[in-house]
Length: 189
Image 1: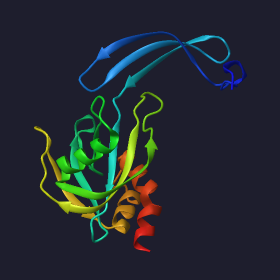
Image 2 (image 1 turned 90 degrees about the horizontal axis):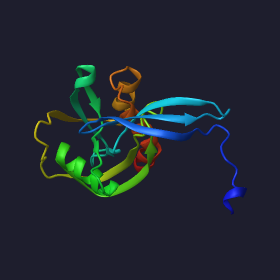
Image 3 (image 1 turned 90 degrees about the vertical axis):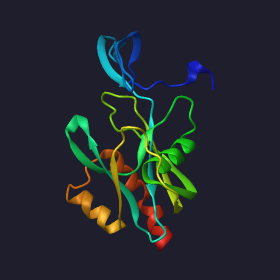
């Protein structure tokens, strides 16, 4: 279809100017000037993130692998699914396999891509790719230097109850768990 025939989103904001205001090891902060849908100008500040993966890993007995890890911005430990940052140019499945092995010591025989989530759409371009991993075998972890965490398992019911009791509050873990629920239930049914 010719470009002039493609209807544009009436809510789209167009970049007029862009400047990087912070260049960190993980995060990059940008400040843009944009043209708003009504023709006026506005400003937008946002974080550029390299993207990440999250893995819902199902053990042979049907239990799910979780981690407990301290998260400095909130100054406390959180219960999370295995996850990690995508390295530049890294294939997302390779990243998921790497993160599962590094953090938990497990490898999976079977991998299923489930979808993507965008956890912080108001201030970041971060995307998190969701995978379901089955056929797990323990081979030993190889954590990054300075990475400290506890690995444990929960049944599907225990995980759901932990979400509803507020014991699992990590957004990526909740989203990934609920995206995978129908697939996990189909495996056991």
